[in-house]
Length: 260
Image 1: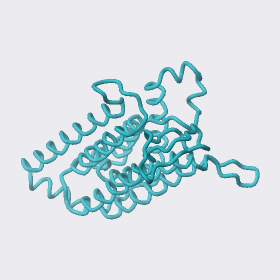
Image 2 (image 1 turned 30 degrees about the horizontal axis):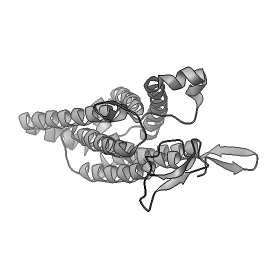
Image 3 (image 1 turned 90 degrees about the vertical axis):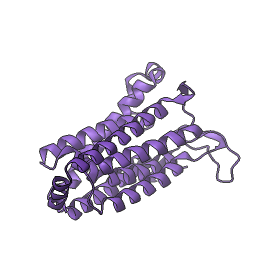
């Protein structure tokens, strides 16, 4: 693995580099989504703010989720390049986008619909940083042909394990591509976001079965419990959007025409 790129006298962390690439890719996708919907707003700035908020949220959630690590390492755990929780990043990132969508008069929920493909693709690309740095996000031991060891990782392992960041990369790209295609046709506001929550939550729930995270309740990890809640929220949102569209089909169509 390559935790750092050594360029002259600089040691560039590959995790940070891939996080930057993920933000660039997400900004590009969201900007294209805004243009497709004829929305005149700063998609690049929105993504930048959401990424910063997501990083902060992911780190804080990880610290809350692993209090023993905080007791052992103290406040410096906040600056560690390893240890980011997907659910915390999701919550803080969504909050940042909702506020910016409201501020830009797009609507918070509409903004989240437009951001959903970008979020899925950006998340997948960001996982390459976990893979390259070997930060401990890999899975349990396996004898499968594609199992890998991470002897030079930030958290090294010398046995062959599931390269779960690569699984999540594939899932993120597939989900992002699906949502992008789905967003090409008029949908009730909130529908695309609901699909994103269901698909991303389901993907994380499944991959956790082969991750090293400890089980806390009913044989499930904290991430799985959070993912299950995400799936439920997504289903509720889709049902709400469908009911809202059915109760006011003409109004929903008019709203979509304004953003088409």
